[in-house]
Image (cartoon, rainbow, N blue to C red):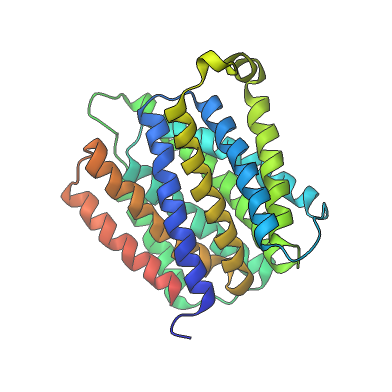
Length: 290
């Protein structure tokens, strides 16, 4: 084939992840209620997951992957909540680039120790380059924000990195263990829906009456869920055929989508230092894919 399938799936996953990531920026900037946003996202994601199972699965529904789905199902909604908070205090470029660099590096090392994946010298160089990029992109969202808020944003970002490592490791295990992707997806989304509900059950219950329905917010949540489910399906397909570090690093190109869209729609500044960091990020990601 003209392009290897693992790379094709990783690129599609990256596109879906990038668009979905920008929707979390929208939630943060528009001051949408984070708990309600997560609940609606996961609710519509369950619908898309069931539809995907009906359309694409070739086996009967199985609960075999339920306990493995507990890890991403409980941790990823928390990861998204941390992201929405972090983006209130640091810029999209600072968040998404460093989030990808740190998580890629940890997954890169995890792939070596837990999945016996072979790593090249270029990938080691790419990992080390990532730490310099982190230094270049340490900046506050605006000059009016204090150091405490900035530290809070960075801290929440690092918490998110830890969570996404566990989530992607669980998904990698699913991918290489022969479980049905679509059964896993349904289990994953149901657990995520329950988790997002438990964040704020009283608020969610009170908000659900016909007078409070916001059609625009519902449509926004449906679009979010579509790209969210698409990203998970393509991530699993990529992990089935490629190694953990390489697939995740290729998907990391997705970070440029929310950054560019944030520059266009939210007028985030592009400095010389930030531009240099962008170029180094491309080099770093390329080294991981060699």
